[in-house]
Length: 446
Ligand code: UD1
Ligand code: CA
Image (tube, rainbow, N blue to C red; front, side, top):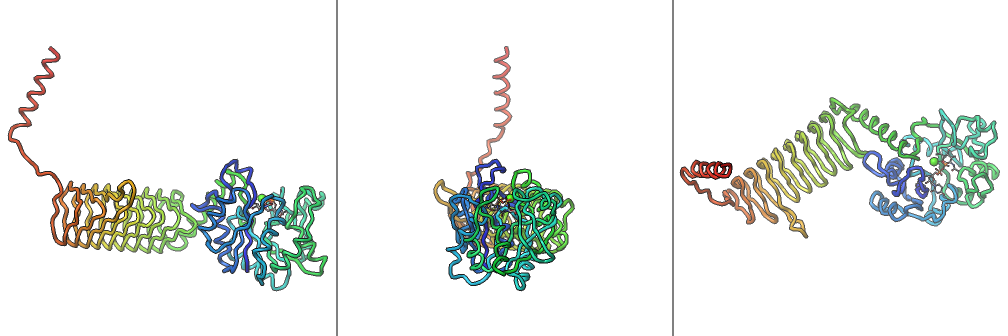
């Protein structure tokens, strides 16, 4: 199976400089949803047809699906013309091609599998749906399970417009047959475009067969405007919350929790209200994410407690039973099993050993203005409150740092490091100072 993902259209109605496939839904670009659904078919080739904002879309694709091939459609002459741009990239490919749209994020993997299965009995398989409001959708003209043709709304007769079974845009066929038929598609229609939807009729003229399988309309929802994108986000979150609850995740106020497409949370984990998940987060069974925390690109192990008000950034790796408390930010850092960073700290580019306690207000000073440096703290160590760990620096196992220390040199195992000015007490000086200041103030008034 090869995927051909159409992502060249302008998306005028988004009213945006950003190409439509890159608008985000569930924390990831729209096109990532199409790629994720298609991935379920284990495609051996993925071709993405780009056009508007091609550079940016291609960069995102390279990141999301490094083995995908991007081909450019320099002029948007229609969906048929767009698919034909994939011909060269599919040269020599033996198997089916499935056409998907980058702006149709809710297609389920099961639906694609059903389409694939229907190919056993038909040369062309189109995905359709019963439309509540058929509007501008292409109409499927069916005779039993035979798909005679697809007629675009603009080209339809009043009788054809009354048909409510519509085209989702997804189509599967043998790749070589698809390309051969597409070369015969003309643009003599109301839009002057090369329609992919001409394929069923062309196939039948050659004695090939075409059929349609139907899915719920919600799956075929395409994003054309910001209002539709916002509605899609709400629908996505509702689905993801329901899925989480179904798999055994505890949430007191699921409507306040926001997930990303790939968020994975284990059974019996607890998510308190107002938690936001960015992409690439995994939370193991029995972990607890407390209210108002923000997580992205991180892993939280079993029994760990995060927040309230914690921020885990990419590369945060939180060990079993570890604690990350309020106003703590962790980035590119491993927090060992049972370690505690409970209050007001920044831990970046660091390793904190098993069972170590990091006091309030600790900061890993990881950036010298040009380069990032690492901080390594061993096991069972005690970092006093308000310690500045100036990286690169290492604190050994069971070592301590005194509160308020600025640690610029390595601390050996078991040592106590004092990196602060020595305290001096001046007897009676506070009282004498106050008296003098009050006298000065009184003198000014008089
Ligand atoms: C298309 C179908 C219609 C179907 C509807 C479902 C055709 C002719 N019509 O209509 O039957 O009901 O989708 O939403 O196929 N694109 C390109 N290059 C182009 C044109 C389009 O890459 O030259 C991409 C767009 O970016 C988009 C997708 O193809 O992702 C669909 O294009 P769009 O113009 O939205 O098609 P519709 O007119 O909605
Ligand atoms: Ca559309």
